[in-house]
Every structure is written in C-alpha cells, then in structure tokens.
Image (tube, rainbow, N blue to C red):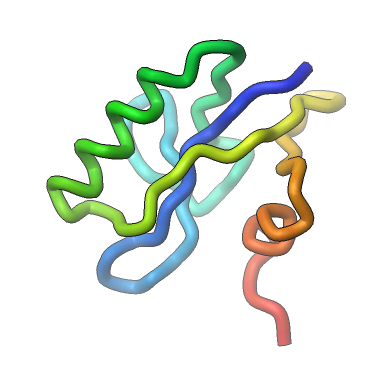
Length: 86
C-alpha cells in the first residue's frame, strides 16, 4: 500500500526526523505517521512545527507499506532513512 509521511531535520542537531501520530518527531522511520490519500493534515502539522522552530526543511515524502514496514520510495529518502554514509 502507498502513502505519505512527513520528514524534516531537527533544528538543533540537524538529525533526520519523521512526524509521529502523536505529533512528535522521531528519528525512526517506522514510527512515522503513515497516511494514505489526502496529506493535508500532515502538511498542517509540518508547517506548524517549522513555524514553532521545532524542525527545519519539513516536507512530505512518498512511501510504501510493505510487509509491516514503511519504506521510502525514492533513493534519496532511503539513504536519509538509513543514516549517515561514510
């Protein structure tokens, strides 16, 4: 199944984070708030978080839900979710 999640960077550390259903930010993609269809609620939450300076560069990404796991669709987002590369 296909859907969307919100991602951003923490303001202080720059860590990659994902919006959870509780309205918190987690570094774990699997804890992200997965939404199918209309993503306007995710957009509102991300805009508020940026305005409140909780995160920066917030945006919505396309994901798939496969075998109980959220998987980013784009190569860029898969790399971001995996963590720093050396």
